[in-house]
Length: 283
Length: 283
Image (cartoon, rainbow over all chains, first blue to last red; front, side):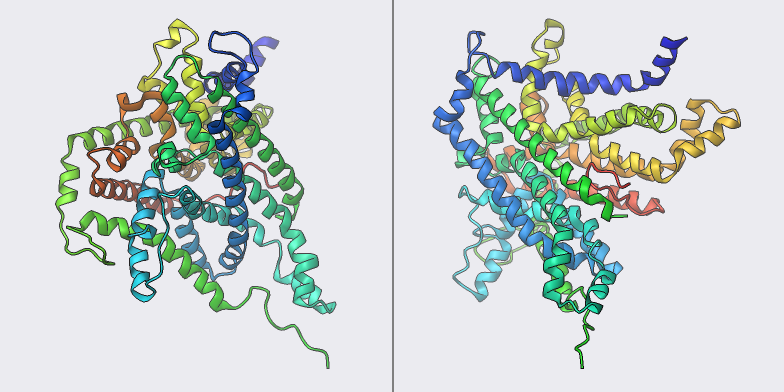
């Protein structure tokens, strides 16, 4: 009777479990092994050393870390006041704001890059309109490797706002009134009560934006990818696979993949820890 | 006399209103620029096009390459969403009514795609299926693309439906139905699904939006053998015979499609959008 019961309890999980096992976990394990294999199939650390040796590969690692940290930091700095403002709007305007943010945060990579360049590029709609008033304005040069940061910010800031919106309510008017009755000035309130309460949520948002930024592939690819001088891990993996075909020389791509997985996993772990502690404030 | 802190915590209303205006402007600008681009005859260095025409719309809608890509994208996306429903709904239901130990497993599984970025998965899945002669026949097939699309995009669906099940108190409903003698399949069809319709619709919408814009998986897994809309757009953006007007038209068509589905989903549901704090449960 017991095995039958066990089957009844777990059988429904089987199809999804198989998909996860064969299409997520199995492949991940395979590239972990690949990262220690040389072209002939022998064991080696050479691929991992190439992360330090091969300039192209090393640059992509540094590039991703830099872009990830920069985008996460700017999204946090610009997104926090925006989230505060949206949270304190009248209900109608608030949902309008959320609708706009959802659209901006979820445009597909190709549509986003195309729309962004026709609006904010060097000959874009907005750029040309601003130039009528202020001739020196140049717009965003999307053919420069830094262009990727602007496009990332365009959809990371909305995602940051949407993510931290539920947290903004924890610093309530009631708290402020209580503090004010005790004689607190706004600056003191923010410094000792408001910000410390928001901090775990903002920090968690930073880590999630970091994960999001380093795992982007579609947007930098649509911006021209490796040909346009964009040095990011995801782009380098794609370029390595395309030149290596389905044969050997996969080792470097495998190492970069594992590196990306480890970075994402660590950042998500920190994210989870931060929110676990802070979630009790959101009732 | 002591100064009273009468001012509210929210900050000046004008500042908040201008935040929304800024969001709206930044969101609308790329879309407006894309609309103008799709209607422009020629667009020289001036803020607005020189003249307007419907030529590009007509040309794109009668381009067999585009129509074929659109067909493939829709087929792939609809099939993915249907299969996600079939694979995820039963174990989720079971975790609420019969075996709660499934739940943490599902929650953990939903985080995996965030640790394994699309480009990494695309590379790894190709390598993994190449391991055995039987599965190697799957390489570069639409079927493999379909399976991988499920694996990387079921998370949002899982969260949306899980939170809908919790707020509908599915466990209690099922106890009542069981007491009256209904079987599990009947309960799922006639009691559970009608109560969480809105969650299912939101989850399906999220999965739909993420699959239809996906670049990494189709590019690495099938490449030009199964050209989806984003791949076709990429070719029209960068290729030797690039046609930016066609990119503008196709981006707008996708946007209109997503918008129509979103309006339909939100209109039909009486409850608001379920609030999901990414991966962390409210307790």
